[in-house]
Every structure is written in C-alpha cells, then in structure tokens.
Image 1 (cartoon, rainbow, N blue to C red):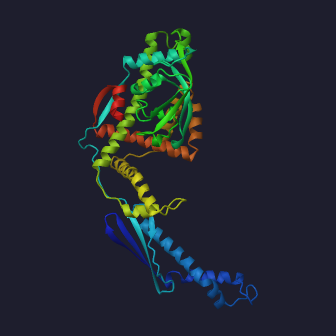
Image 2 (image 1 turned 180 degrees about the horizontal axis):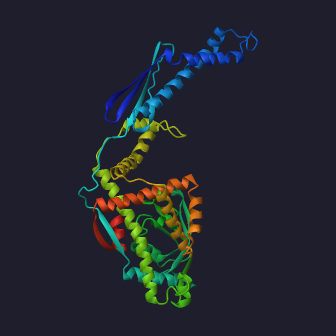
Image 3 (image 1 turned 90 degrees about the vertical axis):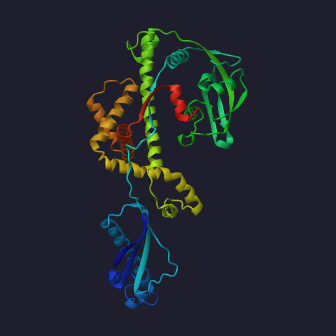
Length: 440
C-alpha cells in the first residue's frame, strides 16, 4: 500500500492511499473459506455450496468490508507514525464513480492540522488586576441585611425601598416562571423605583437588562441559565403576592453566635471585620476570574494563526448524534471558534512554560476544596483521614476528575498569567469593580 500526504496549505492536507489486490486478498480468501460451511443457496444443502457461488453471493460485500478494515488500520497507523496533530478526525472524500473492481483503489481523506504558532505572554498590554475592597458602605449595608434577615417580618400595605417582595417573575416567551422573595434594594438603583409604591396584586413589567447591578443575580431570582445571563435583554412580569417590612434584629451575642459560632464574634466591630474578611476573600476570586478572562481575550486577539475553518465546518456536520446541515455547522463553528482558539493557546502556554498536571496536584487541589466546603458547614478542623477518604471517593468519579482537572489547569494558568502578563494592579470598591466588569 502506498500512502502519502498532499499539502493544500499550512493547516489543510489530504492523505492519499493506494490499495492493491495484495493488501487484502488473503483476508478476503480467509473470510470466504469461513463462510462456506454456513452459506445457504437455494438448491444446495448448507455447507455444500460450491465456492464460486459463495464468492458470487457474498464476495463483494466481504471484499468491501476487508478493504475498509485495511484502510482504517493503515490510516490510523500512518497518523501515529507521522505524529500528525489533528483537529477533528479525517473525512473521507466522496467519489460517486468509485469502482470497487479496479486493480488499484484510491482513497482520499481530508485532514485539518493544529496550526504552528508562538505566543508572547509578556507582550505589552493594558490588562488590570483588580484588588477589590469592601468599603464602609458595603459593610454597613451587609450589617443592615443581617439585621433584616434575622428580624421580624411586618406586613405592609405599600412597598418602599426597604421592603421585601414575594412574587413571581414570568415570561412565557422566554421560558421564565419563578416564584421568589427579593428585597427592593437588591435591584439596581434605576430598577428600584419601579418596585416602590406598589400593592399586593400589582404586576411590574421590567427589562432584564440593568435589572441588577450584577447580571449573575438573574440566575438566582429568575433561574436564567449561566450561558445566557450576560447581556440578556427581555421583558418580564413580576406579580406581587406579599409585601413585608421588618423589625431589625438586635446585634447581640446570641445573634453573633448563631451566625459565626460561639464566641467567634463579640462586638459590632468584630462583625464588621468578619464581613470585610469574608467579602474580600470572595471578591478576590471574582477578580481572579476576570483577570483570567481578560488575559484570554487579549491572547486570542493578539495571537494570530489560521484554523482549517472549512474542514472543521464539514467535520461538524458528521459528528454527534444529530447530523448538522451546512447552515447549522456554520453557526456552531462561529459559536465555538473562540473557545477552540483559546484551547490551542492554553495548550501552547502550558507547553512553553513546561506546566504539567500531576495526580498529586489534583489530590491537593481537591483536598483544599473539600476543607473549604466543610468549613462553610461548621466543620473547621476535619482530620486528614476524613479529608483523604472524601478525596478518594471524589476522584473515583471520572466526571469529577475531568471537572477538577480543568480547575487545576485554570489555577496554574492564572498563576502563570499573573507572573508573565505583568498586569497593572488597581484597588477598587466592589461597585467600581462591577462597573469595570459590566460597563455599568
């Protein structure tokens, strides 16, 4: 068998395979002999059918099956021996006039190659690493929310800026129907005006765009999926079913112990310090996520390479349970191109920086995540044996291993980007961070 590659451009090639009789005749003959004792032809007893009749009835199908096996195996071995780094899988070129009886059979496969490129992690950029602080306004607001949450509910005739509203967000056209309780001051300042001065039974029609300072709150109160939350701009109705004010809870030791455990907070000053610590820890995670996304966008924009776009669109039509039309594949490619580009950049960044993920890395990351989760439920000092047992159970699940491995990669890349990209550090309040993140 003769196999060769024909280059079309840097990321597209064709593999051409010429198959001759010697490549498959032995296996075809073996299959025919195996078939003879089982062959059934009218006029002959089972197992007594002449070989030429067996070949006539079954030979063509057997020949095609064996040729396909030979070609598939040769293609797989050739890709391995040539160390081809493919995007997608080879696509057989369709030949409507293919002649299975020809002395030499030619098979052609289109392939898309991973592009060859370099990335410059230290390129000049305007990326900002935000240090988000909890200012007095945020802390005082959280104290008020705690007093309200643990205070006594007082029914109201008319809503005001401090009311809690129970009601249902609905939009039949957009599949939204969720009953919730929400404080008026949880909405953005602009939206709050639409929810004051209302009575039970009133229906407030609002746009989801700008409804909250942080679009992610749409996930909590409207049950909108994460993939569609950013920039969502549809009208929804909120039907008010109950309006309550509250009598604030007293800030005393009983409340402090209930919130944080016995003796851990003993005064208003301790409470504010705890709120500040917890908030800034959460803000740091959000700031890291924004930094990672900003670096991703910068690298995608500034790392130029070609993809085998037309090949990938054709390939997308063939994979998955549901075959896609050319138009559907075009849409799917446009949706996934950015992610594919960063996946390639991510791999290159890890290779250039010699970053590897070991099983020990995965175990340590999982153990840390478990300890943090246990602490949230009051288990602040679990034994190593307890944690190791949970880690072992978690990592026995392949889906969990995949999910956690992706998080370990993201954490290592974040550390790399912080070091190499040298972002400008800027201290901001949470309100300023939200404005920088969502342009509000």
